[in-house]
Length: 295
Image 1 (spheres, rainbow, N blue to C red):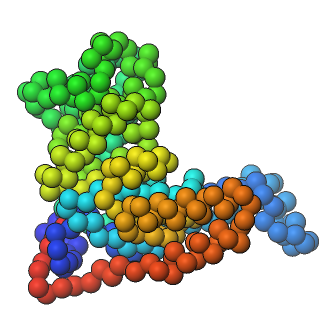
Image 2 (image 1 turned 135 degrees about the horizontal axis):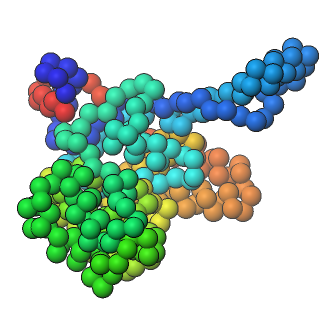
Image 3 (image 1 turned 90 degrees about the vertical axis):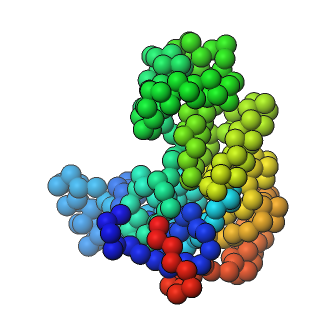
């Protein structure tokens, strides 16, 4: 950031501050937008001019969070709840419609797959991925063995990456992303590999990152993974923040919510959602004169 810009004052030792972030976007829809003669003429004109009917999608409603150093934050919710949208905003891949995100350092998104090449071998992709994240060749050589060990791909590291299963590829991406000792690491659905040994290794690595005064964000549909690896859980639903608290409490409420939905008890599910949201303590981002933290 430029000197003198985006200064906020916060008590504590935050790694990430999400300040009133909202994400909306316009997409084309094939659904009829209404009925009546006027609307029919409007649809006819749009088709004649080859202009699709556009609708607004609220991917993420206004949301504020403060994540301290040493926290591992799990993000849970149904498909379309806003989990990946929030991760992309925190990582800087997407710019929010309103609000801002402040970070103590550049967040590293577990997803160097844009730099990886399927036709190259695993070891070549380790080098390529690390260089893409800013390492020198000497740093890559120094960390190469530990990356391969964490991935568990010792016997396959010299094979083309296109021959890997999705789990093997995910393990390699995690090992590469976690090798840079990021202060802020974001993991999106990369730990659901079905490999118990890798799960243990990745948890140990994430514990190390937190102990190094960093923070970790994890998105996963595996509630077992979230419960084992996270110190805090955020539950999102249809772009709304529903719960923010202890993993066991948030996961239990979410499981009961989805159980009621699966049984067709929409009223019971809605009650769980409303009660959880009503007990949520909103986060206020405001100036504190006692301590200035510029992030």
